[in-house]
Image (tube, rainbow over all chains, first blue to last red; front, side, top):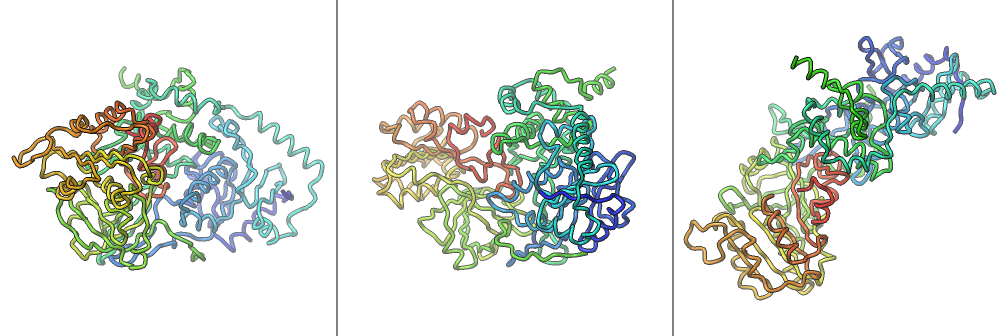
Length: 353
Length: 286
């Protein structure tokens, strides 16, 4: 893969050039310590000093809600109007891995044309990151990324080292060839190696994913699931923020004033109560513990059996988001037999005292 | 905004085909028969399915849901369904009249492994609405009668009036190439001349079975499985030759929406037909 160098002072002019051709989406500070990926109108909004956004970038390829088609009595009209040319800048390796898992899923067997069309129109420019206490990407081997992007920027003080990951990525460089330096020096390489080494040491959390498929099977009947189920609020936050959660619901929204409906796809969550309910009153997963089992079976066991890797990219969003501390880390630790002092226990104590 | 028009969408698996209700009538108090033809004649005739597969049917304003095909692919052109009024989509289907249009896409799912069943004895056990998917495979086997060994049908319903396709099955008793046993849990009509009792009370009536050479096909209410599976295992039919077709919530039919996932399988892609071994292996199946 070709690697070039870009002086940081030239970044904005490069992004300006790119935004001539497509919507630019980048991390923006939303609250004190919360970031989101947002369509950029003002380049000063871009804040690359972030760890994770509230929602993963899946929202650009698989919007929380969009019309798939308009239904009329005699015809069904597919609707792709929500798709536009976008460039996602500043996305971290874990999220690029998340998008790769999504792409693999939506393109296999019956290819989803809505995903594929959105993906075709998305340029991905990655950016290096620094782990915080929730980042688990080294355990999932997603702390570095070798595919799934057009360009990847590694931040080295005054310069970026820029990996060119696709033919389209090379076209982007050619938009402003004079600002990219082909001459990566020995000093740059040494600086990069030092950065890698230090970043590797900065990880504070890890999970032993290798043991998880067997542990999930062995502990499917364990009381830990009942305890987790009791604590779970069934709010669905973990699935919304998860970069690999793809479940959705389909709604038929009648259009007022004409004989037609908007058939809308919207995010769903397997942790919500009616997720597995069928007509006639049967609910295959009425208990919260059964729904949590489904979520973690998918992440820690089923996906590994099918694809050889967990459906977790270690982004830490579930760790940062779950209000009662049920997340990939605490569940993995519980399965390993550790006593996890989860927040919900403290909460329970405070309420009962 | 740069709105991009898709250049070439090969196929869109989510778009239904308009289909016409050709005929509809009540089978029981709450189960109705629907005969459907895809509006486009060419597509109607080229539609190919395997017994045990399902389609997604949509009604404008109500939504979409999965339904087993009750007709056999050996009689192409028309699709048949027996549908119980039980939710939003089925309520809307019951309001629909003959000649009205619905949306239909599919067929989806694995269906019964009819190729592996060739030359084997076929034992079909159906209870209540379980007749809907199993009628397809029964008619398929009867239409290709010389390709199968013995064909045995056990059908149980709560009461005579609730037996789906009652007349069709009663007339099948006349056939000498089918061993047809019917039963009702109770007879409130006073005119039922056949067996009375749950479907498992029919098992002692069977002539001896060659288990290794038999495929058993089961569909019925959840409670029925427990007792019927026990009988089939007692007959020594191998667990991977006991086939059952299962129900799950589905929003897409093509392995994307996630609702029908169990472990690493999707009921819509890898099912809805599973073996008893699958069921033992994947604890959540039934």
